[in-house]
Image (cartoon, rainbow, N blue to C red; front, side, top):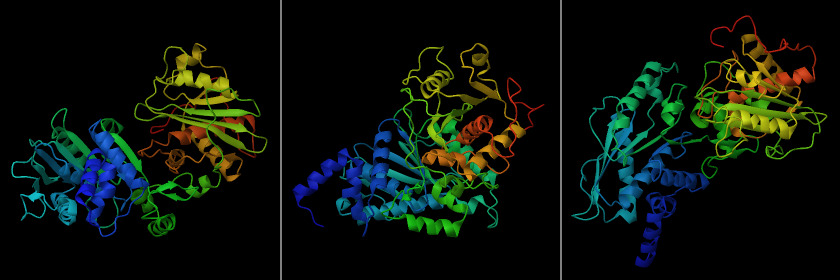
Length: 495
């Protein structure tokens, strides 16, 4: 398509203001057939907003879902509207791979009619970039770097890390046995060297990749706190069969890939590292009790009591959110009327009313106990965080502490499994909740994921144990609280 000078000027003006507009009107011209979509637009909005605010972004997504391509687009946007001399380091696992990425981007520049007048100062170099728009214009340089073998002491304006972990280098002789020492080495290099490369205050870091193991830096919430983070699994909504980027890889294609790849589909396409053990609950089990009509009740409104209401509350450590789930009996089934993951909430605000602008866990529990008419709430008291609130009467009497042990954890998991298999529980269609439920293994270990640590599994388990206490079923015995807390003679190591 040929543009008039006026049309081209308008496109350039709008592209300078909007990375999304640039992608859909200029970057797309580098391809014979560019695949558009809401997913592509969402990446563009994410990259523009956070590169101009927090400066640092971290994005994980499925294989073949434009992770690198949108980095190319982002760099070409910077090249198009360069105002000052800019240096960019493009990192991958090794320098060979980073050189491949820079060469790919350079080919896209060469093919794009909007870049026909750019001056390539490294014309003979396939994988090194130095561009300017005029003889005396600002220069933008992009240099490929390998995480392994990188020499410290260098600095730049922008750092890109594209796929820091490579499958071929992380496994042994094709056996898929993970070399954790290699992962640890990459993590240490990023922490101790790469983070110090961008210039203070003005520098940027952008990381993209597909998660490989639970030890990946993507799952380190302390490290991740300095980034705007976005996790985008290929399966957007399992129950409704919605794909993340249907214009490119629709639901049927995703399911064909799941069938042929088995458990590795979750790692390669769903941002869920493969665990050595199978999950305690299966995806099929969970989907069988999803109710598309269920949504969170408004916690600020008092609801009419129509049946027994049970809650489970798993108290998170600093790295993990606390998780609240609430179920109400409708005469036939237990409906999941409310879920909440409390990321970085304080335990208490000192007894004041709940403040949504400064959320706190105790005050929110008191709020929903009152408004939802909760009859019984089991909460995790393994580390005793809420002991003083219980002893002083701040927590209502219906809140009962549970100390996690092998026996109580087994009871929780068994109760939840039975409720699901007997189809007497219904669950909201929330992808984060579903992923939490899939993140606990057969031996009741929680897997670290971008979205949590299986916290909602234990919240559901506590609620399921409460359901057993109020509505006993079959041969499943209830583990008595003994009047104070559920506890065995000791807590086995690791539990």
